[in-house]
Length: 304
Image (cartoon, rainbow, N blue to C red):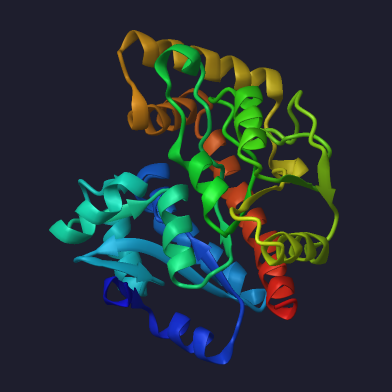
């Protein structure tokens, strides 16, 4: 297995010194944001992680290796590259074998993080059950991964382009804890709240770390969702963003856009219809997740 992993110097040193490490995905760079905001945001997020006493490990597939931590040059190359494959669990073996460029989704980043011994992962939002899934069966592999891979995921909830109620039901069936960080309702990515209540809440990094350590020590497999709302000042008005999402979903349906193409189409459309405000919100929430995630990673390391 180790022959497929390649660590950056910074991550190698962190592992040797027993420092807390935070995994970061690369789909946000290649598919989630345009250049140059993607590379700039990736660098700023890495710097936030460092400033809280943890070490960032941005994960991607390059030249037949799962890279755990990217150099500055690799980040730049990735942000500019065309035809980068969006890699989930099903794609990892193929992309490594064919030496193609792959950007890791939530599921693939969780797998790579666990292989590298990293317990915490920061992202924007998780995938989930798509609207209309009762007929299409379109359910993100992220949810299955959360059920079986021992990595805690800090996110701003799930994107409101999804069916949030069914997403929560699916996670409950799979025994995945969804912990509201300072909130009693599920945040919906661009907005701080949704109509869906959560039965678990934590108000400090230590509480999350203690919960995760107890879960894993009890032999309970799988990760958890730490749902951290977008900061108040960056949140969007629910009626405004939900109206735009409804229109964009209708257009995706009319154009026959399906599967893994839905999210990039939707994010692009929402950015266009909000005149770029959704991109600003996306960047703000990822940075906020990096702050909280780094603090949890530090607390987890102390609680080994």
